[in-house]
Length: 250
Ligand SMILES: NC(=O)c1ccc[n+]([C@@H]2O[C@H](COP(=O)([O-])OP(=O)(O)OC[C@H]3O[C@@H](n4cnc5c(N)ncnc54)[C@H](O)[C@@H]3O)[C@@H](O)[C@H]2O)c1
Image (cartoon, rainbow, N blue to C red):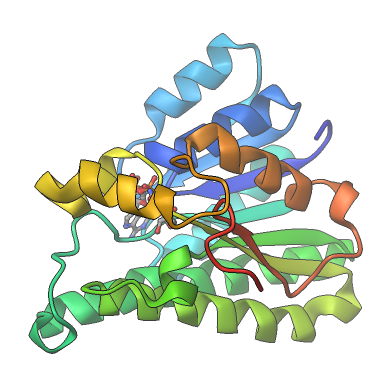
């Protein structure tokens, strides 16, 4: 990843922070952006001897996303990779589809879908000029499997898959690739928050439903992110890569 500039949204904690730290270790210049402070992410990256720009970002606000692109260009002169990882997950209250709070539904769509669209349209003009770029949209197994009691979340992540395919077709001629990664459940603070007291049982049931019967760990996803961010995947676009131990077979 040497000489690559990577933006990671939702990099204050959880999976986004992990992607930022690992991509920096792999040699990338990282922009860590989140609605919460990414100073901790930046500090760890700098302690490990790499460069990092930490920015506050609200993905639902297009001007905030444009600012992200402008500040990235000012510091690193290019944008090679965008990882659309920011999302609402743990704070969404699970329930039957007909009982989901209407405001919560709107918030999930606003952050998880509009946020991805906003960040894509903020960076694509730069990637077009460069004639290169890789966009990685974080979806979820929830979208493909149809995770019960999470209709808002699952629908928002299914929309991410649709958006990925459309944008991939529209920007391919400009040398830009767009793919989705769909992980199964990972033990992050957000996942535990979402599952509450049912967490242990849920992880167990999910693991037993996979071909590879173990709970997905943060380290298990990063290789797929690195592959899509790097030129090793240069002929791969519009795809959904499941990182789910073989829960669903596409
Ligand atoms: N943990 C899992 O089991 C799992 C499984 C499949 C997919 N995912 C996806 O992976 C990603 C990361 O998951 P996580 O478990 O680390 O979740 P998380 O809640 O810890 O991280 C999400 C981050 O997004 C940020 N964010 C929320 N709203 C934002 C906004 N408007 N603008 C900018 N940033 C905002 C949050 O502050 C947070 O740091 C999410 O897209 C999630 O849907 C997670």
